[in-house]
Amino acid sequence: MSRQRFIRFHTLENLDNFFKESKRQELIFKAHPISGSPERFRYDSGGKAVSSLEDGARFDSMEDFYRYVFQCDSEGYPNTEYIDFELWEPKVF
Image (cartoon, rainbow, N blue to C red; front, side, top):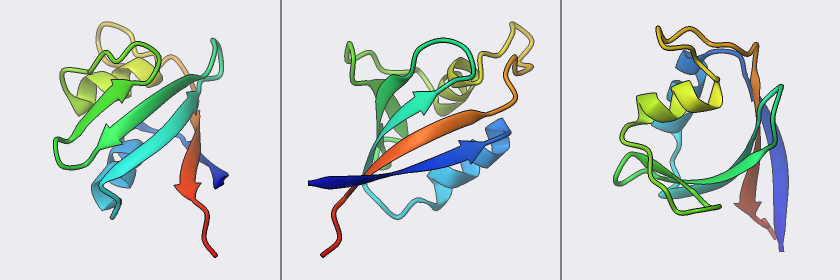
């Protein structure tokens, strides 16, 4: 059984810091953009990489992932105010 928690990120930098400070080898989460459908992802801290759990596609870089979830334009400016992450963690007994 797992428990979930939601975390809101307002900037790409906040999201980057979250991943850099994570102590876990792997994170499974769902990103909820303001518009569009939520998507499930897996973060591997060893490879510093994110892949989609829907189709297995891997982002070329963490920056590409940040731009994707924040729906950035071609110049890198976010088109959304925030992203909610639904982070799945092992149940603590």
